Image (cartoon, rainbow, N blue to C red; front, side):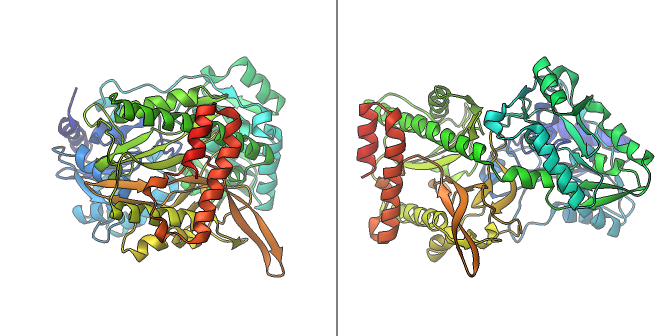
Length: 596
């Protein structure tokens, strides 16, 4: 098996043979997925970097990888001796990858990309830069099947139907909502490529992507006809029967491009609605020039999907309850294990969490790979333990655990930081600042039309007062038995005009990371709910959905206000009341003592 340097050498040899001076390799697939199937993990295969976000740029002489603050430490470790330079996205001294590439090349040089794995919006952006520099662009540069030995095949797992007692709406009802949105935007048809959007619309789920219960597919929707493009081996009798009953036409996965090109056969003007950030460039470019494109920053399907209906909300609450029971059992187990002197490691923690969650009704797997970071590993934001790094957990220091599960009735995502022994005043100060930020955001009241970026400061303010900060976002949308990361809403410093609507589920996860020492993060999921209506309009607030105790041993209560302490006591009382019917007497006693 080739190492990273050998793989890059093989790629450069092919580039020279094709007169390509540079190529760009993103982390995505033709569906712009955060977690692509193994077949499309080209960036990971080439660079050895396993983080979920990153872009590799290779010239005939240099190579660089751009990734964000979640992966700085991980990337530094995984890129050692690879010949790939790490560029830390978000830092003022870090150049944009496309600007950097343009500065490295000469007018007339050719840049190769695989257009099918880039979002159309991204290609539109960097094409302007390259055109200004006089660079040529080749959109079909994809030699990876030739140089990638034993490249994984496309997944062939069968799809399955998510029953309406979980989804809350039929596929037919959702399609009607989408066609109404098309009418509102004066569009004839729309194209869907994002797998979670398609899964939500058609009430189908699958096992093609790690952690995300989706299956490879495309779709086009119009008032006249809705077509699902999916590999035939995924269609069971149950799936076919349900989709046909909902008026859906089933076509082969590979026919999507031909379908889009056939739009030219319609009488003009024929309008096509797309979200350029959610469709790959190859499909976008296949839309005939005779068509009128209506480009939207947020696809109507994503806007509809983000607002959970009453059935979904009830299911999510139930999933949180089950997850709370599982995590309480895990926390008790961890405490006993450490007290007994039995050996336990970071990977053991992930296994135990899976075990306790798998005992819960409707469990369907993890929603992402568990992050169990002990001591200095907690400072690596998206740390993943492996055979080499797997640290033994001792009854001292801090342990950060970020984990989540998929249940048929909901998706969970929570983070807790635990004190495994005595901690310093500085650690308590850091932890308390994080907790105060979590409480401030969780209890926020805000007018309808507020965007998450307007609330982000609430979670950061106490860190800023201490001269500290974190570089990742504070919150992301969460799907319903779908992707643990979804939009359009987010809570972060970066510009995002998407507003927080009733029924949205969003994470709240402030953190602090002391490199080489420890990391602290606390995360709950929040539901946007009504607060009050006044002469000034409608106001919203948040309901905390997550049911998992917060470690009291890490709190400096002298820094907490009376209202913050009340919130914490009320939160723990809520946990006890909701979880106790499902706990043993010993477990109830443990929660009761922990929550005083």
